[in-house]
Every structure is written in C-alpha cells, then in structure tokens.
Length: 307
Image (cartoon, rainbow, N blue to C red):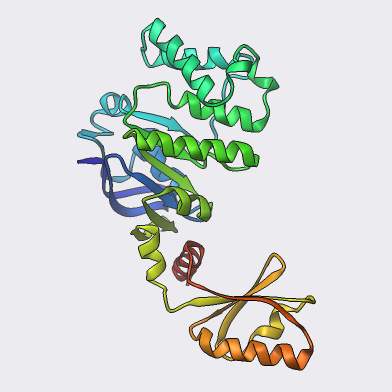
C-alpha cells in the first residue's frame, strides 16, 4: 500500500522548470526524506503534493486520491508543517490549536482533549494560555508542529522542521517524529540537513535542479561510492590543508581540529602521512580511516548535477 504515488510530476514558472518530471512512491508507514540543496525543488514538490500548487504536468496521489481531482479527501488524510509556517502571535498556544481543530471540523470536546495532549507532548502545557508572541523561536516551532498534528492524520509533511532551532528543540522534534512514525503515521521530511536525514529516514530521495538524482536507503546510497574513502588526521600543530594534497588525494577538508583527506587508496596515503609527520616534526595525535557517509554521497551527486 502506498501513501504517495508521484508520476512524471513537473512544475514550471514562467519557463523555469522548478520540478522536472519526477516519479517516486512513498510506502505507508515509511519515514521518507527529500534531501537537496536550497533551490533543488523540494518545497515546490511538497506544495504540489499538498494541493497548494497545481502541477504543470504529471500526477500525484495521496492514498487512493488524486490531489487535483479529490483535494478535500486527500487533504483530510494529511497534516502539514510548511517551512514558512507561523502561529497566530496574538492568540495563546491552546487557542491556536483549538482554531486549527475547528478548521478541520473536529468536535469541540475532542479538539480540547487533543490540544491539551499535544501541548503536554511538546512541553508547552505550562504556557498554554500565554500569547505566542512571548515564545522563543524553538517554542513557536514546537507549537507549529503540534498544529500540524491536530487532524487525525495518516500522512505528515514536514518542510525543514528543525531549521535554525536550539539543540533542545531539535532533539525533541526529532524524537517526536520517530514516535509518530512508530505509531504508523507516514512522514515525509524535507531537509538540507544531511545528518538529520541520515538519523531519521528509512529512505531518502536526493534532489538537484528539480530532478531526482538518487533514491534509496541511506546505507545503500553510501555503498554506491564505496571507492571514495577518507582519512581523518589530527596533528599537534595547525597544518594547512594544501600541504596534504598528496598524489592520490582528491580533496582535503578541515573538520574541527582535524583534516579529512579523500582518496581511493587510503592504504597508500597513510604511509605518506607518517612520512610527512616525521619530516615536518608534526606529531600525529589521531589517525582514522572512514567509510563514505551520506554527506559524501550528497556532495558527489549534487556536484555531478551541476557539471
């Protein structure tokens, strides 16, 4: 059973193709990630799936309903937390939730009960009667996610839900996303935070320039570039990255107090690093060989799309 089925979906704006003939499915109960750089087409895709934008061509089905032909039935299945969402600042937290519940047509007693439970879940119950304009950014975002959950949904769309938040709010929202997914809710998460996608998603689709350039489980995507390993080294003194561009090293990045060397032959570069250490009198504090991660996959695939 599929929660979402997209076929040849395209969106153009005045001749510019924002989403270019994409097709994919999201299984019921799946936690699916849409990953890509800013401007890749993620948000435009979500807006078409939620009925906000009309596709130039192609189809999108939410469960058994075509989002264009049966928008009311499709929207009754979903909760939406858009990237630019906001609560009503002059209303209290609980009044925001009750208003959303009323818009969904939820019976009064049930919407009060649901609002109270969501406020407890998101750590906002003690401030439920405070106006939202007094909330911090993290508290506002928690409330906005709670608003997206007022409906009896089967599918939740989250567009960059943790962007710019404090660590505590990020951890809470990610924890709750997992819990809702464990209850059988299908979650579609758009993000440019690669580690977030790696931690949360069962499958990810990587978008670039409006196209899907790869779609699979994160671990399988990592195996697709298994030839590109990296070596992470830390010295007792600061070393310039360009000094470690040995033959066989394709790139050197600074990662905190360490340097990461990308190579297809780590077994040949390690002895070269040791020789460099001895000749330069820089002591090696740590040396590790790393398999490719999702960031490496993302960089390789999105750079490839730009060439």
